[in-house]
Each structure stands twice: as structure tokens, then as C-alpha cells.
Image (tube, rainbow, N blue to C red; front, side):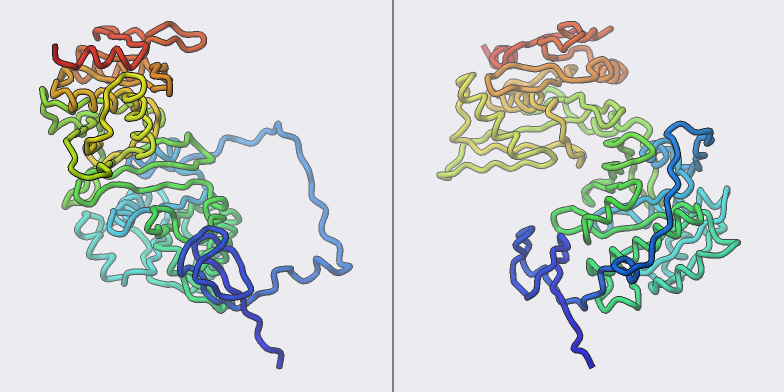
Length: 458
């Protein structure tokens, strides 16, 4: 009998090595390499004399009708998905444990069950446990087909039927296993193979497939990176469990805009939609407090106002602390360096703490000016006007650069009752020097030095 051949696979990046090592040379992860049984990677017939079937090519222009969309009844979820769910599409939903992934998809399943047949297959919970959650959410009477299974062969046989469901939820893909692969559930080989078979069936049968994915400690979806390339839509469910707010963010969408977000609030009755997230994030804001600034940002196509808080305090350490929550720490270091080198505001000997209130994470560079205003306000103990919003990008020479969609940001600020706006004065190609503010009083600044003069005490 031939000796079984094994290989060692990194569970973080999928790199294959011939022997075990404590550290993966490809991604640098420690203790992520596991031994798996090697499989024949080349299907039989490819290297032989049997020819393949010729592919029929067609033109780009066709008479196909637009793909219909199903709505879940959850407007925020439909918005992130591009206006609804497309038949035959596959959506991957990732998030931290306990953040509300199963709750969101069970509510979506309840909304879809009124329009079409839907199946909810749980590999992590028993049927009675899912029923308890459904009763708490008020979905006990919803006609959802419920099952608890982890064997891929059984799941495929149940779904590949004439009267099969038109939407399927798999919670989660890391618990599903194929009995033809000699590896534990959740390993790279199992996740890749199981996801590929489920996606292939969904495309052939035309049903909507939801896959729940676990995340690593870095916040990325666990398993092979190719999993995110195979699916049509990748959604991240974010938020701090200490806050009631939850953010559903689309990082990939073949049928809609990327970087779109949906805002939810976790209640004892499940997740409820937030129609006006700006008002919710600013509900507990206190005016006339130094170090606080309202930033007018964009999340996808939606303008959103959030509070940025900064605290500058004397440090007794040789290396002062830099603590950042909800923003890029490297970008904070850049803003501090520009304030020191270009504006003469030395903060290198102080502890600096920065926080985006409400648990939201900001990624766009338009928040630079708001962060700088909050830092200057805290260092000088001079409050930013309570009725002012701020946005703009800062360059390394201290210039304040214009950002996209300034009109939408100002309209959102005016709708919430703000009277002033601090915006860049540098023009964008094809646009004026500063966006029109309507009822807002516009203060345009061209250099970071101008911000110090606005907020420092005389």
C-alpha cells in the first residue's frame, strides 16, 4: 500500500509547505500551519488525450432582461446589497463573534420567506436554539425551512431538488465539511472546497446563497483569501459590543456600489434600522467642550456626521502614548508631525488620545482637518463652535486640500441644524474654490496655520 502523502497548509493565507514550521514565511502568522492530506490537484483527463468541449463565445451586447431583485424587508440591508438581492448571487457575511450576524440573517430570512421559499441551515446551533431566537425576534410563524447540518454531501442533496428553496443561509461555512477531504472543518482545504461546491450549485440552480464567515483576531474573514474572490458580495458586520450601534459595510459588490454602509441598532427585539444615523451618532454630544469636533464624512453614497474627540495631556513617559479608536494611527502621527513642523504646535511631549464616538470607523482622508481641529482645540483648551462641521484633507506641507462630494456633506449638516462649516479653499478641477453652503456660513481655509488662529485663545 502506498504511503499517504501529506502537506502542511497555512490556515491564514493558504500557503503550502513540505514540512511544518512555527511561522508561515508567506504571511508571517505564528502557529497557523497544520498538516493535511494531499489531494490530486490535477483532475483526471486534463493531461491525457481526451479533448475538452469547445466554448461558445457571444458578444457583449445582448437582449437579456435585467436581473430581478428580491427585497428582504430590511431597507438598510437592501441598500448595502445595491437595492436588493440578485438571483444566483452569493453573499459572504463576516463579523466578530456575538456581533449579530445570525440575528441579521434570521431577520432577513423572515422577510424573504413572505416572497419565496428560503432555507436556514445552521451548523453551530441546534434547531431548538434557532427557534428560541426566532421567537424572541417575533419570527416564530415565518415559513422558513430550518435545519441543522454540517455534512456537505447531505446539504447539496437537499438543496439540489426541483422544489428546492430560492434562498439559502449557511451559518457558518467554517462548520461545513466534505467527507472526501481528510482535514478538520474550518481548515483552508475544507472551506475552499465546501464554498466552491455551494457556489457552483447556487449558480446552476439560481438561488441566493448567504454564507456566514468567521473572522480572525485581525478582523479579516478566516480561511483562504480566495473565498472572498469566489463570492459576489462581501459584507462586514462591524461594531463594538459595548455600543448598541452596528455597521454593515460592503467591501465588494458585483451588483452594486462598494463602501456602502447600513446602520442598525441592537435591541432586545433584534436589530432595528437607523434611518438617520447622523442624528443617532450625535445624540449624546455636548457642546462647548474642548477637544470635540463634528466631522462631515461620506460612507459610500451616504453623508454622515460623527463626533471626533481628542485629548492632549502632559506625559511623564519618555515615549508619550498615542491611543486611537476608530481611525488610522499612522494618519494621526502624520497630522501631529505637520502641526509640529509647519505650524509650530509641539505636541511630541504629550499623550494624545483620539476617539470616534459611537463605534464608527473612519477611513477616508477627509477627516484630517477635523482631527487637527480637535487636537488644536484640546491643546489650547478652546472649544470648537458647537454649530460647526469640519472636513478636509491635509498635505505634508500643511495645505488643506479639497475632498469629493462637499455639497452632500454640507446638505446633511444643514439638515441637522448646523450653522457653520470649516472647509478647504483649494479648488478641485472643474469646481469652485469652496462648495456653496446654502444656509451655512462657510469658512474656507487654505493652510493648517489658519486653523490655529481660529481656535486658539487670544
